[in-house]
Length: 276
Image 1 (cartoon, one colour):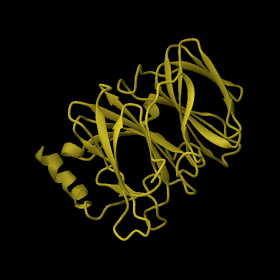
Image 2 (tube, helix red, strand yellow):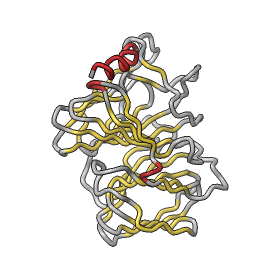
Image 3 (cartoon, rainbow, N blue to C red):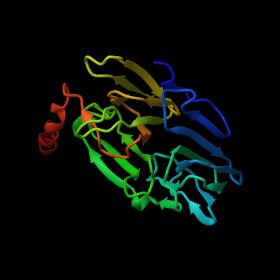
Image 4 (cartoon, rainbow, N blue to C red):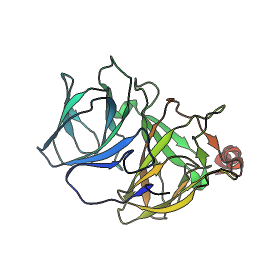
């Protein structure tokens, strides 16, 4: 399927990476903002809600008559927890970098009218250790159900060297008990930056429109996940962090189902935790 892997390029300022015009996405638009110290960027989001997600650096943000000062507590994505600002549709904002700034900009169509900006500080992030053994990882939910968004769910996963994540493989592309259709974007960062990971996107057996793609992902790459299971692995010696952005008609975090071929792994996690 075309439009799934979007390789990193060098740029300054704002770069819109993926959206409905260059991928199978219906809701999500995802971009990256890179400003030098003292530089400023202004935007109006019109009919879309937005999440301004600080990957690294510090900034001031003015939005809808409110000022948020000195946001961001980590130099880079591997040195702490993130800061994010949710903005309802129609918001006008200006961002001023207090030091070199790296920010993800996530938007989706929205009906979240009447809401003001919502600041999510590092201490508000929900941090969970998921999995066991070599599929253990840390999941950080930043814009979760408690944030008054209409569609967006945003967070990040930190993958230790050599480990798997999004495992057992899960999907969220069908309306059924325990599952809701949600498209997703993964934005990958690697430490040290010359490392790499792998993602496989595949549909269940018997799917009328089968999909099975494997991509090597490097620092700054973006992958669109319109449907199917999507496990990730990183090479030994390298830490992988990926920002994840979910959106759909229904906003339901955790509404996914595991690949039945590999679901047994989840049952083995408690045993492995005790043994190791």
